[in-house]
Image (cartoon, rainbow, N blue to C red; front, side):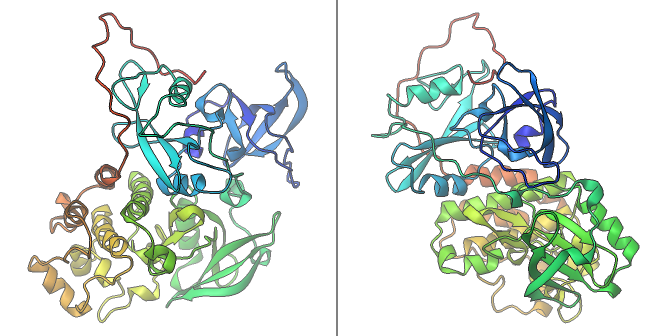
Length: 479
């Protein structure tokens, strides 16, 4: 929902979607359905002024979590609108208890060609439909029926089947957001003392760093992941400079960075902790083994979304691989260690001659140390291989010392088992020898989006052309 909120001017009024009990730190408690005027919408905690029913101020002012708010009078406040939800999230939510056949939701889409997607439960499956918006501002799922707003579209498909035997009934039950989805600190409090953190369990280690599960014992005690960086890997000045850039990067498919500790040894990078661990282990687990192609493509698409954001911000990852993607609730994927490879080298970099992840690295980076967004695109092709093979090792049977010679001869990995030609073509596009011929992540987003399967709606005859003089309408809020 954050991406939609960021586009709104701060003068607009908002309605709370859930109850919230503040826990100090100037937080404002409220009930669902209360109205607010935005005072300052910087970061994840917004300064809001509570309003009476007549729109006048109650005199109460404080911080509220942004993801509990919806702009008044727009699609955001509708019970059936779920923001920029992924397909997998939509499926998991609709198949939960409290939802039945016909339960539905609408989610935003930045995919090419359509504005929103309609997801509907049909017994024990979920069907997805594209919602298009034409040049006149009207919405439709097929060419027989057009609607001036989404409410009218929904009401229509409550009496007219959207697919064979399938009517819309009630909105999907919404999950309340959690505090751990938010950055708990304003930007100017990024640096924290090590005493605020407790390391409880080691999750992994490399040559120059270790990762722990732990607790942040600050204003709110929460579980976090803490990456400790050996003091001799980088200087304090470099560490502060690099992490200061990283804290500006915020996207739902990037691991949220909470805080750093640059005073004391070792340095700390504190991030959110995701419940299912890294993608490679997940793909090899029983849960990962059960994923169908649709679920695998959803994972691939989420990673592309995160990388597209890094591309826009000119941030090169340098170690894009399944082991550096983390998985959370509802199979939300988040890219980890973005931008850190400039000064952090993990054990996965070790090979016979260079400390690089050989089988994920582009030939020009292997040969000359040239890392760019185009070398990240090569790595994404290998990552896509890992996803579609459910965790197979790339280049099986090929030693690191043989890899560069193998690639320079024009050889490429074969498609993993049961991988379609269309998906394999995306991999081959990423593995072009000339970096300039490889797709951008914007290109890759279009390619992956086009592979997603959407249901056709009920077939209907195409209506006659609209009469001449039909006025173009501005896109309007839902009534």
